[in-house]
Length: 183
Image (cartoon, rainbow, N blue to C red; front, side, top):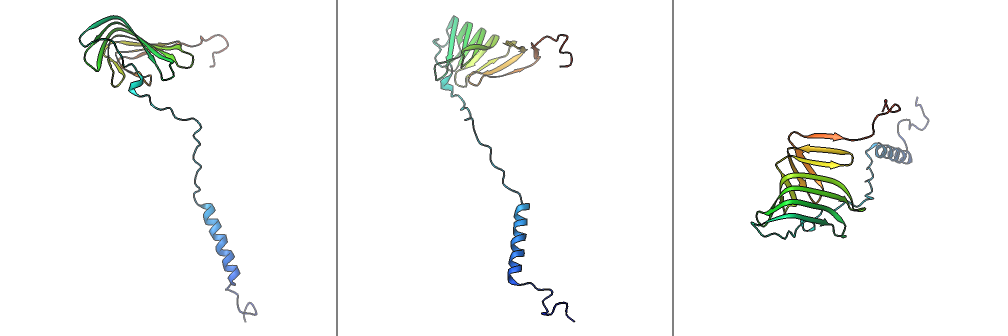
C-alpha cells in the first residue's frame, strides 16, 4: 500500500523545487563573506613637501665662510616653518653646507609660535635632500621634553629626526601632588 493515494510521496512539484532552490541560494549568500565598506577619507592626506620648498638660497660661495648666518624657512603660504641660526657657515660644494654652533627652531605653521629647538655643535646640510646631519652631540628641546643623542639626522621638510647613540630623554610634566598618587 502506498503512503499517499497519488503515489508521489518522495517527489515534489516544480514550484516546490524552485522555492527550495531559492531558499538554499539565499542561505548560501547570507553565510558568505560580505564585502566590508571602505573607510571614507575625510581628511586629505598631506602631500610630502618638495625640496624646492625648503632652504635653497644660501648666499655663500663655495669655499667661503660666513659668521652669524640666519636662514628663515617659509612654506608656500608664506608662514615661517623654521629658522636656522649658525655661528659659522661654510659652503663645502654646490649641495653641502657645513654649520658650526647651530640652533634650528621649528615653528607651528598656523600660529608661527616656536615648537622645537635643535642645538648642534657641528652639522652638514644637504640642499638637495634637505637633510641636516650631525655626527656630534645634539639636543632637541620642546616645552614638555628634552632629548639628546650622539648623532642626528633631521629632515627639514617633514620635521622628522632620528637620534642615535647614547640617547637620553627627560620628560617634563605635572608634578605629583597629594591628589594624584594613583595616576
